[in-house]
Length: 207
Image 1 (cartoon, one colour):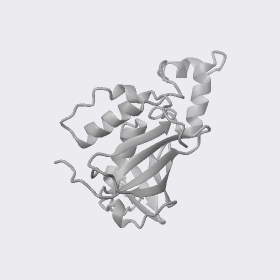
Image 2: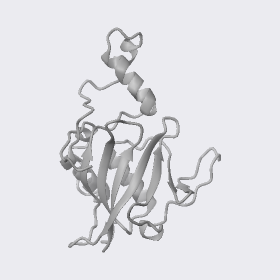
Image 3: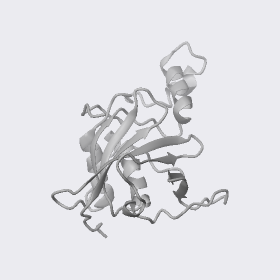
């Protein structure tokens, strides 16, 4: 079923914390999207593979999927952005993979009314590559990256094969990200460049 068009949209900047220079994406998302759909937007925009649990923390309240181990109780993600009392400069967090703890800070930049009602979310800009899945979180990944690129490191052999030799920390492909967003929210359009979204190249100087 195709998402109904929404008159208003939120422009959000999503930044993966723990990296300098920062890894970020700027997205335009219909105000009628619920948090479950925003989760999907973030996954596609960064190139995550949705292997793990996630949660949002907004105004001190945790939203997310039910925890299968019963350790946490979350409010339902089936609440729309329009109902979350979000305003320009509001910040909230999205955490993906509770083991690696990839924490993303989401900033509401502005509310817009597109000339054509928005059906599919759009990535407007971004910088730098998302790390691979299961790579240890920000600090573990940077240790792994150093070992993989340093032949004298005692863990070099273990990590050099884990890291894709084509992985480029500075890469970001805006067009490929938008192909994947369109595929995710319009399933009849295949995402033929999905694989290429794992390597990113800068396309905008917006920050």
